Image (cartoon, rainbow, N blue to C red; front, side, top):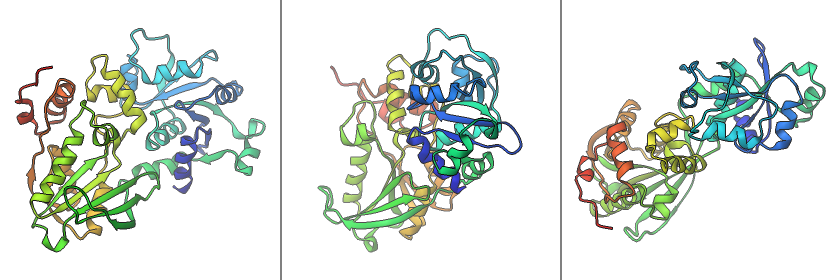
Length: 370
């Protein structure tokens, strides 16, 4: 699994990987995001037929009749450029190009795509089948450390490791405008990619029982810049106000930007929404599921704080289910309703209609006049 974890960082640095499958064809692969002409030339020089690997969500968007629950491998021509491949992997195309021999992905191709997804890159990779011993220079690059080698088994072990623990790093008092008695505790997830923060408001011995807790997914556009496209920033400030009025509590600020697709993909989804897609469909166009978040890090953060019974500040039923499934008792829920406007109306409607959020009260608000 250690090699697979290294693979996440290699892909984030736009480097190629060799996925060596002892039981099937191996592939030399690279992520579509950050694909350069030089990397593309290196892949096509193998002359084994380059392929684009996409998720079932993306395959359905492309209208491929072969789309199933499996990842799909699509033939590419030598003439495809990096920009053309990126468009094929990420845009809501009006006119679909001719696509060659789509088929279910091999184990090695699946492993490459899974690494891209876990690295929070666009879930699409380009790959060419190789016999590592038959391609000059590959084994030498592996031995010298210039090319990382992983196996599908290593990737599968990491992907099936459902629990991503958050390890405590450091803490300090940070007085806030809503509460001067506030403490920030930083946690880093066990894969080393993400950092989460527990903001403890008030003295723990004075917290109510159950402890008020907010699981807040980071939203740079809403939390920091006050974006009108979502209600995230308002929910953050409503939570801190609730803690200040009710004896304190804990806000877990989780690195779940864009429901865990990452900021780059979230901005891609925003662009797709300009064409009329809702927040769920735009994520699926990019190849993601409706909600990629995992709350196991939040569980270990609460355990570090010796909290096992909570009052959850949320409109999301999946957060309640996730906590209870992990052994955190939820003895109450407090809704958080922001202000409806013409920009966030489609977002809120999709939350209610597609994800079952408890936001009917917010939808009942009258839209302000322009």
